Amino acid sequence: MRLTSFSDYALRMLMYTASAGDRLITIEEAARTFNVSKTHLNKVANTLTRSGYLMAIRGRSGGLTLGRRPEMIRIGDVVRLTEPDFALVECFATGNQCVLTASCKLSGVFGEAITSFQNTLDRYTLADITLRPKDFLGGPTPPARTEVARNDV
Image (cartoon, rainbow, N blue to C red; front, side, top):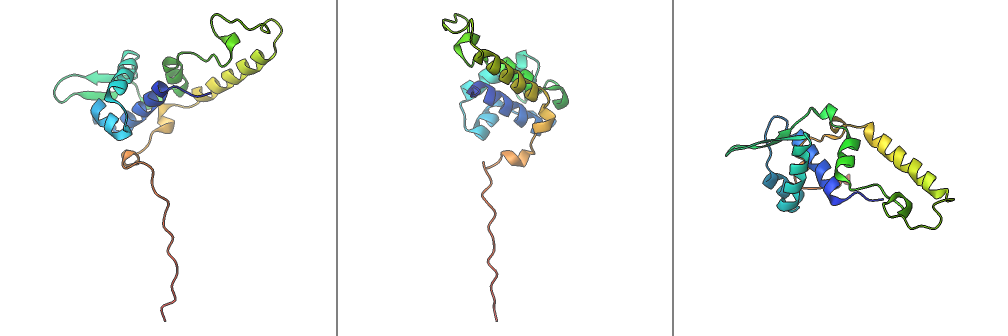
């Protein structure tokens, strides 16, 4: 299973906004930070704003801020909002044509797995995954260099 890029960007956008604290962020700034399309992030921001996760402040010095406290934003709710479905196998989708559906036991296994997945996500909030602003700068941190001890005699 893999989340869509829409869900990925929604979670990143929320994490970035949470890390900014009271400072308003812009879509352009977030797009540069994540090196992703401004157009795509705009769609993500619109969805998050319509759902109350983000609040848009209009005007020349406007931007985005969290619409709820980070402790009130469950990761599972955001993923359910942004994922089109959780149809891991054909029998979960509309228009199922699988000939095994009536007797298949695999759908129960996958159903249990999806429930566990969603329950796990529901245990975490944005507050649990918020990073520091400096964590967003420059991408991954290179591994620490180890100094070789020298014997200067």
